[in-house]
Image (cartoon, rainbow, N blue to C red; front, side):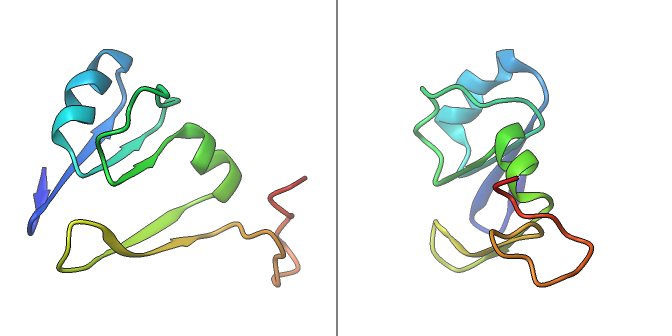
Length: 86
């Protein structure tokens, strides 16, 4: 899909990675991304979601995302959160 000038792909099928890596600016995948996926400006895959929890992406005017927020941080300040390094 598109949001403004950004081409975004949500990948659930490993067979879709090759095409999406060529065409998308941002990829979000609920499966591990192959290391060969170098085309997009941002790839958030299963491992990123496992380590960082939910992600929020702010899109700027340029090709790269303006800001990325992760729910799980290295030094959590909320008493109910565990460290990402655990």
